[in-house]
Length: 273
Image (cartoon, rainbow, N blue to C red; front, top):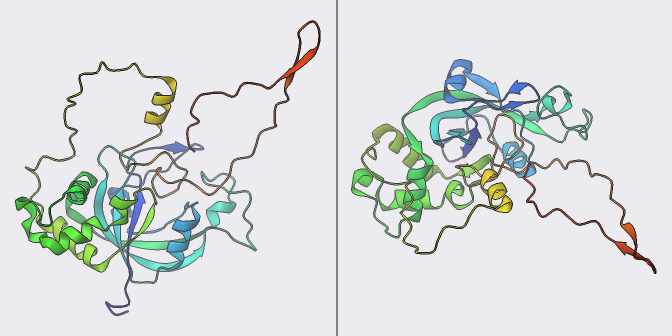
């Protein structure tokens, strides 16, 4: 494969423990380095699956820590086996079992990825967002080495323009910039990712059930919870839950005639799967 044929990707995994159906689905850069190579199983989102089906052996991967306190790029990897059926979807004991997929007509696919190296300097999402939100075309002095082209490349990343998808395209230019940043660092003394103090004089309103539910369903990657395997919990799965039975309306006797009163719908915000 020539450099012009090679494609570049970002793939997310959760570095912190999260137990699903009795199994811990964490997969950190430490786990990846120890395993050296791994199947990328458990993806249950059609767009992410389709992107994996486009991958070729030798494509490069930014390995990203997600759904954690400090999300960001932790290492580098490459595709070592092209897309093939994800057999974990047929395993009823697996955290991401899908009863609607069949072995003779597979719906979900995975690739194999091989670990290449750790990022010498962890590249945090907060830094990438700081760059993306900057109105300036020139980079901060601490990372002047990325230049204006580096600023443009980071600002165009789906990670900062869209965020939630667990498999994303990365431009060749952006791959080079991220690799350079991981080697050189320099942002340790920068202040970013901190919320500015509020200047509002209005009294703070007490939290409601709706606001608490909305807050609890988000994470540091800017998305809600998801159902994913060796990826993060910020992407919505394309596995629809079974629908419950519809409740019938109640008849209320007012003394003169019966009035049909529909059941009141809950006003609570339903947490995303």
